[in-house]
Each structure stands twice: as C-alpha cells, then as structure tokens.
Image (tube, rainbow, N blue to C red; front, side, top):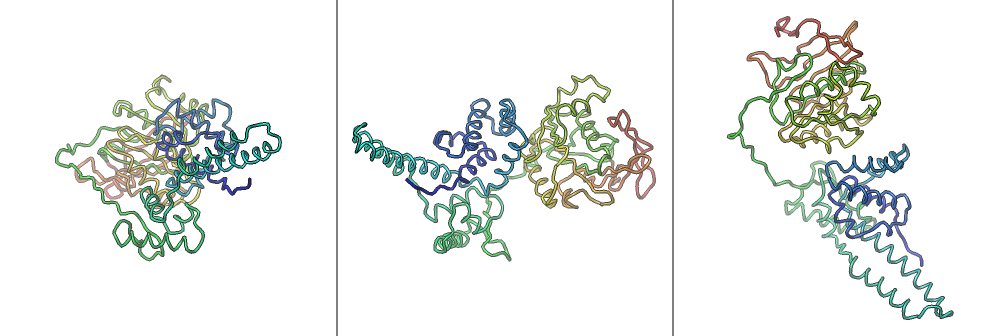
Amino acid sequence: MSFIHDKAIEWYLVACLLKKPDLIKSTISQIDSNEFTVPKVKLLFTNVIETWNGSPKTDTFFDSFIAHLKSKNLLNQPMIELIFKIMDGLPTTSGINNYIIEIKETRARFQIGCLMETLNRNNSSREVPVEQSVEAIISCLNSLDGNVKRQATPSNIVKEYVEQSEGIFSLDDVCKQYRIFDRPGRQAISRVLCRMADNDIIKRESNRNAVFRRIERGVEVVDWQNATGVPIKFSCPLGTDRYANLHRKSIICVGGSKDAGKTSFAENFALMNIPNFKQIRYVTSEMGPDELRDSLQRFDVPLETWNKIEFIERHRDFPDVVLPDGLTIIDFLDVVEDFYLVIKYMKEIYDQIKTGVALVCLQKDPGKDFSRGGAGSEDKARLAIHLKQDYPGYEAKINVGKIWAQKGINPKGFTRRYKLHNDGSRFVCEGGWMSPWNGQAKL
C-alpha cells in the first residue's frame, strides 16, 4: 500500500523532546520507538526514553542524554553534529502533537497495507482465516478514527501555535509548522490570525507584513518593600569589587581578546567565591576533562577544593543551565557568527536568574571597544570588565560599574595593569586602579 509520509516529522519530534524535555512524559505515553521508520531517529528516540527513565530531570536532561550516548559509545562527532542540526532545524515545539499524530497514522496505514496484502494471499491460500485478517484491519482503522483523531481546524492550529509561541512569528511560520501550502489554507490561517489580533490576543508587529507576537498580560510585581537593599558579598580578581557592588539577580560580563586571561579570570572568580555561594556551576565551551584538570592543577590550592564547583561542558543553549539562585560562570558564550544574537542570549540568561549571579565571558576582537555583540551585549550587566594584552603585560578596564561601592566614585573607565603568573593561573597587579579623571585610585 502506498502512502505519503514526511520523514522530517520524525526528526522534528525528537528535536522537540531534546529542546523541551518536559514534553517527554506525555509523548512516551502516546508513542513508542517501533512507530518510527527512520533507523537513526528510532535510535535517538530509544535513548531519549532510556535517559528519561534513568534521570527524569528537565533542567539537566540534555547533559544526561549526551552522557548516556557517550556511555553506549554512540557519541562521536557526526552524531553531535546531527543532534545540533535537527535541533537548529526545528521551527518550534508547538507542533509536537501533530507530529505524534502523523507518525502514528503513518504506522497504522502501513500496517493496514501489509494486512490487506496478507488478506489477498490468504484469500487464495487459506493459510490464515480471513476473519482474523479482517479483524486486524478493523483494529487499525479504529486507531486512525479514535486514538489518533486529528482536530486540525484553522482555529485550533493557530490557537495551539500561539499558546506555545515565544517572541515574534509570521503567517509563514505557522503554515510551515503545519505544512499548509495551498492558497485557501493560508488564507484561512491568515483570517484567524487577523481575528486574534483584533481581539487583542496577539499583536501585529509594526511595519512588518503578517508578523505577530503573543500579548503577555502576566505581570510580576516587584516586592521592593521587603527587599533589604544590601549588596551581596562577592570577591573579584584584580580587586574590582572594591569599586563596584552587586545585588541579587546580576550579570557580570567579562570581555577579552584571545589569550588575555578570560578563563583565568573566570576560574579565579569561581575559586574566590566558594565561601559566598552555596552552588557554583562552571560551564566551559572549550575545555575537555584533561585540559580542565591541567588548568585547575596550576592553582596553589588542594585539587579537591574544586570539588565544591560543578563543571559542565556545553556549546549551546547556555540559558538552560543557569542556576537561578547560585553562581553560574559561562566560559565562554560561544557564538561564531550572527553576533547580534549575543544580546538575545544575555537577556535569556538574565531571565533565568532569580537571586543568583551569572558571570559571562565574551570574545573581544583586538581594537574594538566592545565584545562581540556590540554595546548591547552589556545592557544587562551590572559590572563589565574588559581584558586585553598590552605589552609587556595586560590591562583590565571597568567598562560598566552600575552600583558604586564607594560614595562619589564612579568606576567606569578605571584601568589596571596586571601580569599572569603560574602558567596563567594567578593575577599579579602592577599598581592600583587608575581613574581616567583623577589619576591613581586608592585601594
């Protein structure tokens, strides 16, 4: 029996589960790996289920999934590239219910085709009673009509999409998600979107044709009356904390050119703040286990001191691993192109913080005033520090110091020279901080 099946749907479903693990529980209750037709998708889906059964934690699921693949010797470079490719290619997770429906319908149609062929053979050979084959076909038909009943009206399609949408979206996005390419279908979706805009459920983006965003009416009242207003306790390499304070829910941005000491700054920051935070997570995007151990061994502390810090490796989706109430250090925010996305990622990181602090390292091109992402990369930062090589040593500059630690002293523009000793693990300052206005600042 011939049938049409878009096999990309199977890839999309797995991508949905990897990007939004809270969908896994409901998904595996409706579908199993035997209903997939693409062998690699079936393999990934099976490992998703195994990972979930072993560690059903949504906040660390992706890391657990990667570790699970590694434990089964399935994690190689092609597999990593494949996983990232299917996740990048996913429009949104809002279509997962339709993906499940199509996969199940495809499986049912395939089974019906096989059963009908068997029925034809049995009709002539009488090897199996005809009644048995007919009952099997009826069972498959019932699954199509009942358990996998599609409610794909234009209103339901748009409602489902909007409920799960984030940010702006277009008519094309909705139609692509649900594979609606005929003119009448697009017109029906367009009418529903316009009706929702007229009813103030979504809003048209100005100067853009058929582009909308969901109206977010929920508000979070700021309870400033019960806040202490007292800065948190933290320590910073180079003595930066003498001039800039931090409150809860803060971002520190460390921009630096290559080999200027960003990783050393981040590692020292983590080590110095063990007494100040109950949880510290260090996210590295460029060091494997051996290189990391070699780097930590250079510090003049017992190696077991670092056990108080959780080290994880990640190359994308950094906001997903931010500790809301602890200290998260991201070394570094790895963006190789589309640097304008740095601003988006910094906002997403900020949104994940509740009472904690995040330190984010960014690459900075020599001679540039700002890190990759431009001035907007520091919009959310309460403290921003730039590091650069300045032969025969290095120079640090406070580019942002929103909350002054000393009355009447704005640290913006302060600079300090330093050198790196112990193979780059220890900062050795040369003189104090220099004010661009009043000469040397006292520490």
